Amino acid sequence: MSGRRESLEEAFAEHKHELTHGAKSGTLIQAFNRLPTMAGSSLDDLHPLNDPNFAQAPGPVIEASMDHKGESKRPQSYYLGFDEQDKILWFEVNVDAEGDEILGKNGWINKR
Image (cartoon, rainbow, N blue to C red; front, side):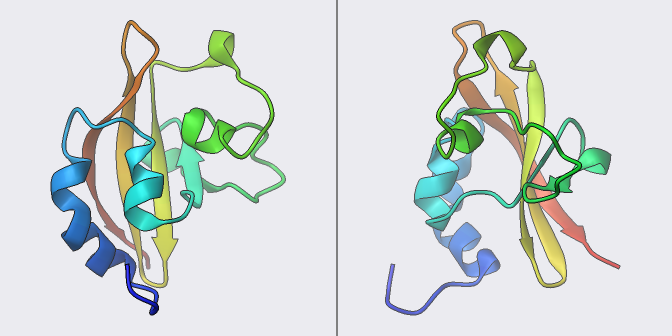
């Protein structure tokens, strides 16, 4: 990554091959060089991680910035998002039988 900060779209295009189905959720931090800014149980439920009304975000990507692991509370799937000006890039994350968090579908949501 160069000295200038890439836009979300540029970073996604550059790392798209690394973010395919089957990649682990930690790949997001490596690809975008930052933590996701949103999380939720569905696309309709994406909340900013700094929202005081959003009590707990799932997953090791978020837990990496915390000191605890909520293994027993981990959902089967959830969504992470990166918020940028007029769009949100979202990723579905599925938890497999071993507890690994695997990227599923992804896409863009245009903000209104």
